[in-house]
Amino acid sequence: MPESSSLRKYAHAWRALRHRNFKLFFGGQSISLIGTWMTRVATAWLVYRLTHSAILLGTISFAGQIPTFLLAPFAGVAVDRMDRRMVLIVTQVASMAQSLLLAVLTLGHWITIRELLVLSAIQGVVNAFDMPGRQSFMVQMVDRREDLSNAIAINSSMVNFARLLGPSLAGLVIAATGEGWCFLIDGVSYIAVVWSLLVMRVDPSHRQAALERAREPMLRQLSDGWKYVSAFVPIRTILLLFAVVSLMGWPFTVLMPIFAAQVLHGGAHTLGFLMGATGVGALISGLSLVLRKSVRGLVRMIPMAAATFGAGLIAFGMSHALWLSMLLQLVVGFGMMQGLTSSNTIIQTIVPEDKRGRVMSYYAVAFVGMAPFGSLLAGWLAHEIGAQATVIVSGVACLLGAAWFWVQMPRLRTILKPIYQELGIMPNAPDSLAEEEATARG
Image (cartoon, rainbow, N blue to C red; front, side):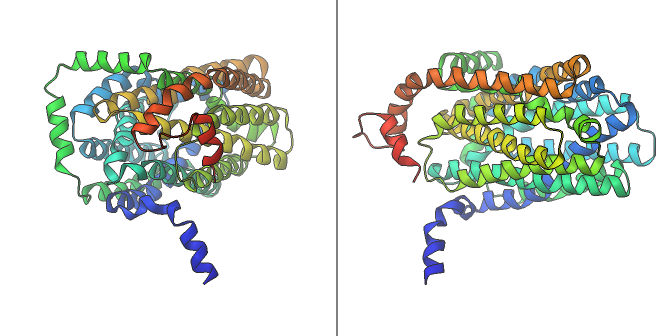
């Protein structure tokens, strides 16, 4: 009886999995994402093995992310005008082909930096459409809007379970056979997510609404999306902080091979351990958000997460011991994912459906699009002042961004309160959103 009562108490934590489409997506993505993380680690290690260059590590990352910065706003308009499930099927098939080609070139010992640059850029083009499409399709996989925040949190936990397992497997596979097999495993893993998308049953009204939106001029829709994002204070403020963190903080991952090899004097397995530790921290963050019953209280989590992320980076930059570096990566991973998921949940909750694709495309620009410039900056700074000093500078920038966001919070609460009330997220009675946030965490 006590065990049954405990299960009922936390039943809300997996409520999004009651929806058939999301359950299918969860199963397919769980397999595919492990391969994706294996490829990320293998690519970084392959570049470092071929060149031993911090600048080229940043350059490859730039090539894979700059298409999102350039194309995501246009992709967001396209996503709002198309069947979002079909968009995802196309992007997943394209990603599978890219990984398999990378595997063939690597296993055949034909791979060079030139091929890595070209294939990274191609994957970046695919991701420019995939990310807003994936984020926008999330709401169509759950029949109840109130379960959307739980679906986002579960999705984040799934990503971070893969982040935990994928890099560890990649380290073992690279040490045993080489990078090519990581790419091959990734290519095959896409079959699972493509199958899950094909067998979903999607409400045809979503497709009809997309067709109606497609009748409007594309340039007008592009302009409307930008005006909405730039004028609506909560989304604008969240995306600005997100852009700062992506520009200055997230590119620390580009330098991880240098930390593994030069700072900690290890090999591919050390890189796997560090990336795995980041995944553990992010997974803990995701699970903590899964247990939440409401989006209330998430606004203040955003600057707290950015500050945690920044402080973790500063301490990591000072560490020379593997055990301490892994412990600090737990903190970094927790702060990184807490901010990412909290931001995503709030934006997805308050954005109108007809602008979802365009808004999530700017989310992609802030999340992925700023990272290529950060990767180049990180690679250049690491060359000039060293990887450790670069990560410390990145952490300081994140702390400053968190302080700026904290100052904006009273205004954000005032704007969000009536929106939450209209959506039924909070009752009309309380006099302040701050009071509601203080009691929401239970």
